[in-house]
Every structure is written in C-alpha cells, then in structure tokens.
Image 1 (tube, rainbow, N blue to C red):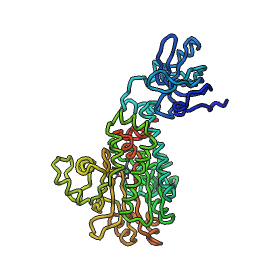
Image 2: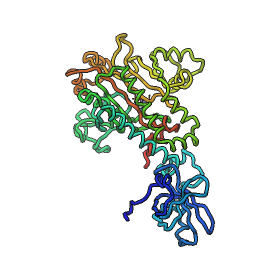
Image 3: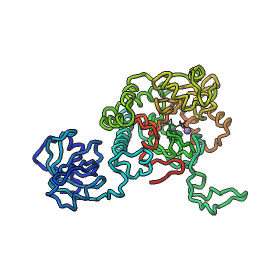
Image 4: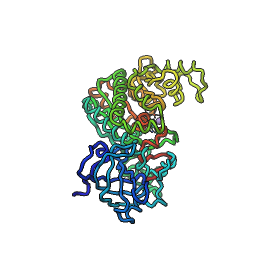
Length: 465
Ligand code: ATP
Ligand code: MN
C-alpha cells in the first residue's frame, strides 16, 4: 500500500460502519484514558472535527503509546465502528498504530488548554494545528477558489500583473525597494546620487502596491480581466487592518461605468459570502461559537440586503449631524477615517455602504472626473466591523483630462507613456476596483486582527517564518 493511501478524517466521519479496516493519519489533539483503554483524538486538517481512536492499551507496546501525546503524528489502521460515546457517530478501533513523529509534552507549545491569539502569532509555524487556524486557512482556501470560480463563470480572464514594478506613479503608498546594488558601496553618479542605471533593471524598482495600471492594459484588450496576487505597502500603520504584504483581487472591466462597477462589487461580495456559508459551515459555526456570536447572522444579513449607495457629500452631512464625537472631525474635503466609515455602516445604515463622488483632491489621478470639477467617480465599499473593504473607480478615459491631472499632481508623465497609450489608441470607458483579500477574510471569519487571517503575516518589525 502506498504511503499516501489513507482515508481523510472528513470522509471517515461520514462513512458508514464497515468490517473493512481503514487507515487514517494525523496529529494527536488529546489523549485520555487509563491502563486498559486509551482514547486518542486525531485531526488531519481535512475538517475541524476530530476522529476518536480507541486503543486497547495492553495490545500495544508500552513505549509506543507513551509517545502518542498531544502534537504527535501517527498513522492508525482499524475498523470504523459506531461510537458509544457522545459527540461522535463513529470511531476507530485501532489494530495497528505507527508513530511518525513524537512531540515531547515538556516542550511542545500547543497544549490542550486554549492559547491566546497573541501567543499563537508568536508561534505562527505551529498555529495551523489549532482548531482556529485550521478553520481560517480552510476558509481562506475556499474563498480563493470561489474568487476564481466567480470570475471564470462570468467571462473574466485571470491576468498576471508584475510584482516588481518600475513605476512609482500608482500613488497607493510607500513602497519596498527591489535592488541588487551593494548597499554599503552603491555606484554613484557624478552628482553623488545612487546610480540606479547600474542596478539590476537599469532603473529604480519596487514591489508593487497594486496591479491596477497593468490590469487596465488587459481590460482594454480582453474586456474583462481580474488579478489576484500579492501586493506590498511599506506603510508604517500598525493597525488591525493593515499588512505590509497582502493579497488583492482587482477586476478591471471595459464598458463598465461606475454604476456597473458598484453592481459587480456588490454581487461579488454577496457571492463570496454565500459561498462561504454553503461550503464552510463547520468552520464558520466553530468561529461563531468561539469568537463572535453574531458572525453567522452578519453574513446572512449582508447577502439579504441591498447595499446603501450614497455620495461622499451626503456622508459628510450625516457625519456632521451625528451626535457622537469623532477623534477626527469631518468637513467636506477631508478623508474618511475608519471611525467614520464604521459609524455609517454600523450605526447609521446598519448595512454595507458604498460611497461615491469623492473630492478629487483625496483620490488617485486615474479616477474619472465628474463635470462639477471637484469630485471623481470613486467608490469605496464599507463593511461592518471592517470599514473600507473595496476601493475602486471608473477610470479617466479622456487623454487630455488625464494628462492635465498628471501634470497638476507633478507625476512624471514620461514614466506613464505606456499607460497613456491606452487612452491614445482606442480608449474606452472602463472601471475596476481592488478588494483586499485579508479584509474580506476578516469579514468572513469574524476575526478582529488581520494578522490572524494571513498564514505568515508581515508587519512593521515582523517578518518571521
Ligand atoms: P486604507 O485607507 O484602509 O489604508 P487604501 O485606501 O489604502 O485603504 P486601496 O489603495 O484602495 O486602499 O486598496 C484597495 C483595498 O486593498 C482596500 O480597500 C483594502 O481592502 C485593501 N488594503 C489596502 N491597504 C491594505 C493593507 N495595508 N493591508 C491589507 N489590506 C489593504
Ligand atoms: Mn492605505
């Protein structure tokens, strides 16, 4: 029998009782019992539920069972029988047990007692073995799959945009430099500056903050594309909603105006939420019971409500009239902070809100300018407990308006020649948005810190694992 031949615990748990022995493999969650009988609770990551293994202690070498402790990895063969104990329908009566790897109880950090999320972040290499992180990472997988499925089913093409970028015009925040120059002795130009012509790419390069600009190039040829990849921001914002490395989903669509863009965003978010409820039930139930009793209710309510769509101007009016004191006061022209976004979503409307028509001053150069000369066709989608989950816009498709905005902002236009070519040749109305994958994961799992929905998070002063 090949080594990988095994029954996944997820399948074993729903299998009927049978006379044929099966083999399961996994990590011991707990072991209890006495000198005669041992109950081993086994998990292989296929489901949040454990399979109970019952072992007749005298039938096994003492040295073997002694090492079957929390964290050890074992392979067990035996018959699946209906369980007399409560809490499970079937269990395995062990015939053979093979120990792959012991886990010394004196040093294995995950013991039966619950651990704090903070402590588990320090052992991110082992936390996938906990119920919580097993659930989160299974959901993360299901959401990734659902994202590709949604776009594929709707005629979008998955476009791979570069991770290393030579343009610093995206304007989404601080970037991480990519270089092969000797930092202690970099080549210099005549005027004493670092000579990036001698760098690997012959110019300054950074890790991308967004795939959007290249995404637009794809949309203006393939009509509807999306990207789904890592992005990087060297912003020193130590918040529960920011990572230095995060994943972003960025659809970009030709022939979509801002309303079409909002329709897509709303439909997409509802699809992902529905998918999670339909495919991740056990894991969501666990997280609901463990961390956030309102999680399942919140997920269902998002599916069943129309998102509120308001202008930025209306949002400012509502916030100015609110009888709460915000840390940051608002007036027309100021950017909305997370406290404002959450007030609108959680207190005022009590449902997701999409804000459009932002002041052009606080938004990126590529957003389509409205005729009022002050606002742009931006849209931010705000979610309960999260604040901004999506940022997007209709893109400026008029070459002249785009060029004048670029020069107003002092962005080096020569770096953007390739981008402007799309407006020069066969320009088309088009729109797109970026959904932060980990923000979506926060919403779906009900976790409150973004470090807990990313397997190995990167934040200021932290790039362990
Ligand atoms: P915020 O104001 O919350 O910093 P942003 O305006 O910088 O967001 P965009 O540049 O519009 O965000 O990026 C699109 C989406 O990417 C955001 O709506 C959010 O979901 C996500 N996002 C942005 N920055 C981060 C980050 N540092 N970590 C995780 N997700 C992020
Ligand atoms: Mn930001």
